[in-house]
Image (tube, rainbow, N blue to C red; front, side, top):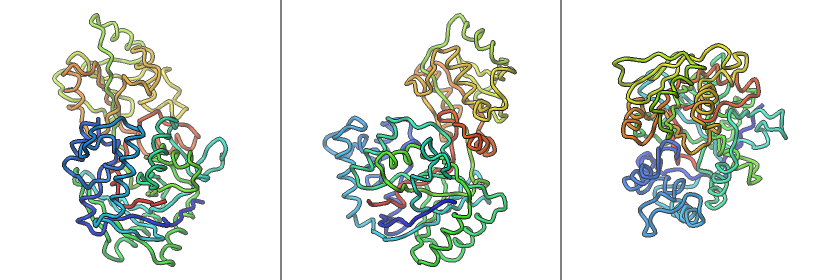
Length: 412
């Protein structure tokens, strides 16, 4: 049973036009601070001035160190200004329904229910019966960064995106019926053409009905936002901002890698790679993004290679070990390139908002030595890992579309 409480005090844009100015991409949709700064420069009312305050170039102090006291002070100042802005208003005691429709999936309505989920329902070693199951290990430094931002701004901006089983489609149907029952309160189209619509739910009976819909679900799986939920828990908060979507309506897209290590000029790295993978050169191919779960793309020295893991290089009965990202981490990054830790700074994770041509160009520029393209994890694979109480390899699931940041903020 999943509990979803009202947001006691929510900050929301006053209109769709205001939502277009206030909302923004999530921080993890950018490759570096330069991209974030350019976005803020072009969108000076964006909530990115709060979530990525260190990269805000619109103040005299200039760029700051991420997570520093000065950056957190700036975030708090920007949050305070947003709270009293003519672009926002405060609404008390709400849930919300959100719909995302993207051009690449015509006819698919991804409709979810948002509110405040309970931190004590997250499954951990201390709460093994928790009904909200994390799919990825939590790194303390990243969770602390989210916690510091929450604490200094007295607000939760980042929303945790969760999947719930909905084999019958009843949950999706009920949410769609609610969305069709009246006009939305906010509508905005993001930079990639995805339409986000929000219905603010404040009437008591409607809230109770929607809460009961979710409470009927035995469990949920954290799809995006493990560190955001961990940040709230780290502070001892009882709740975190969350949205729950029917799993069959969600999409997972590829999450690729760039590696700073340079290839061996003698091609000895290829010999060592061949111990764990069958290697096939892809002649005349400009970009390769594998679709089959047993194929991996590798770009080095101006050519694309297709890698197929050899039998015995992973445990097929272990759902987490069978994910391509884990296979690559063990058998390529660790065994061949000397990068045993997925958190190593020599690895750059690149979401599906950048294609294989982008990765190729970064290698050709000399900035990186290798590009690795991975097949998208399927929803079934994702749920199988969760059901085995396993953890996904770090940065292996790129759920898209991403929830638009800043459409509903919880004020503490």
